[in-house]
Image 1 (spheres, rainbow, N blue to C red):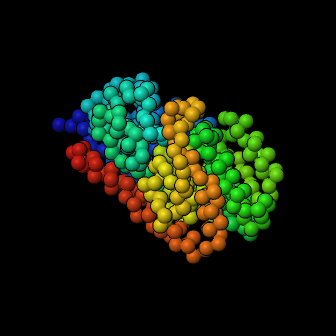
Image 2: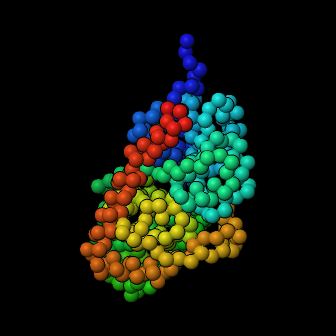
Image 3: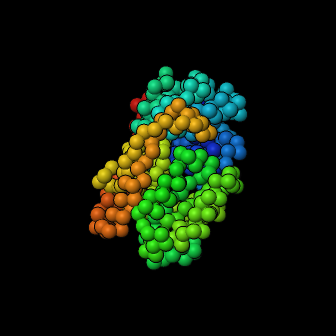
Length: 374
């Protein structure tokens, strides 16, 4: 007799598999890690329009309408769990082990997300920082399963093709206007760069890659004004494919993130994978893979968020990075090439060994085996 269809061992991965933003990328990274671990899986696409672009087709071949497996992995935040049940129906949740892979970027997990715990038997998070937040409210187990980082680049993307100068050390930062500028804190990177080097210094440059500017055009105007006044600040605001973004990381020299909070810090990890030195606020998710031997962790003080910014409420705390410390690192990276190469090599080693899709796939397999689901 055939077993019940949902008793097949494997994962139904549920998420925004086409969305060209963090939450979609996170689901695609999970697919890669699951595939590397040779765990059977299929993808259920949640067809909500959550990003301006929904055209990443890299996992189209794994999409299915069937739900054959005994484990559901919901790669979406807690506030999408109820809409997912409305869309897919309660039957998807029945007789299966339901895991929510949830992101959150601040110390206090919001009360309004708590009802979502009723829909899962377990929560997976990307970092110790998110674990500390979620575990305070969670009635179910919370397990750290980081992102498996691997970066494909294209040799066709060069500084020349991007209109960037070829003869200087380029710092780079990236932010998505939909990720709330106040959390990503691009102004601090600009400030640190201006503190570190004389105006229009021809030996260095700062590249700002901005996504989804049509979402909040008012956020880009002050940046454009700034670039107009500095011959060594370059803004790229056209839409890039994932491959182009990765290649931009690879043709620049140092990735900088002076975030106030990150659940994981994927941009930092991807730059480290490529062997780049990175400068990042020494607080929140990225501290799982950044330390003084493999990167440039920036001092900070914890401050109140103060005003509600999107989902980030004023009573919460986050980091205010020290721009002078960041500027010091920028100067040191230029002045001490041997140290720069040493931390970059160590950073690359950290990501390649502990945060690869193979390593993360192994963690997923181990956890599901422990639960006797595989």
